[in-house]
Image (cartoon, rainbow, N blue to C red):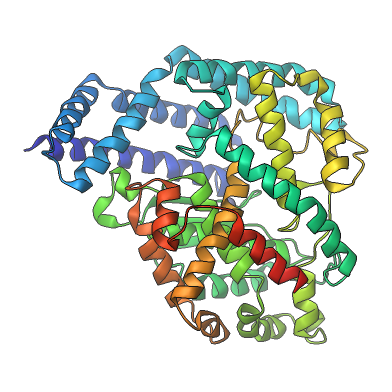
Length: 496
Ligand code: ZN
């Protein structure tokens, strides 16, 4: 057995352990009895300890060291070189954190989620402040363990978006903010896409499920190796390209949360199903970054799934399942409702234009906390000021402001920016798909999405982690990753 074969064997074993842990997490969010949470936490913690010890085992570290030397000597194939580079990155990262720190971090965050829930329910930031201070301090220590150049925030970003830096984000986000603040006001002033045109009705769960499954199946999400279930927060989880599951949630008075969550998650699932089975176990069989993953879900959800060609095909089916209220509602009015734009306080309810301002606000705060320019105690005021400046809204209660998201309680700093990177990249990738596949949107009117899915599979998904996210985008689109196509997309859609 060659060293490379030995490496792949070890990695395959780790991937199977991770798949078992992922399946247990999926079950935790979907079917697990409520009273089983304690036992499940213990099982998951045992498994993650086992996985961590495999990843940091001296034997593996030494094997990677020898293979890194072989790579430098030019005796590996290009593909093997990618595997060794990426697995070295993973192992280096895992070995930098002392086990006691990992435990402390995990305990602090699991305690803090309850504290945050209580503080949010009471809309009282001071209840959450000590926990948040602790989490900020832990993230600062995390950055010190991981090491960084320029800003400690770079170490945090690297965990979600490898190779992305504060310097790059500052440039992209400042440009986007300067574009979006006046753009949002301009779109609202046209009154074409009025905010919150809610279409309410009486939508049975059974009917919603049937409709959502018809959509995701047409998109190309393979339900023979996937399934759709219900959870509080929709998510996608991939154990293997042949076992990728999504969840959605049903609001019986409003069908849109379920439909757009299903399209969004199916976009993630199509990425996971598009990873190549032959690379399973190695980094070449894994998705490359949170931002690129989000570009896939946003591409389907917002660009394709809120577009006219898509609904020319699906709207008659919706009218048939739910004649009330859709039989009487012409398609253009329906499209106006699903594309409504207007500033709002809550990120998860925001439209695709104002959404990014919510993210930029959080990015600026996270970076300030890490660099020491901002202090935790001042966050409610900073939040109010930025909301006023970017969205033109007053925050009346902290539960609608600084306390609205779970991410910080969860310990996740550096995650938010990947949402906006996903939005930006979705437009750039989609523009290339359209240009290289003439008449692509004519397909949608016939319910055909195979050309789009096939192109994404080949150009984005099949690479795994062979290249960085920005390199994959550059190869697929022929351009450096940038926000140009995204701004064009918004201008054309909302002002043309
Ligand atoms: Zn997503």
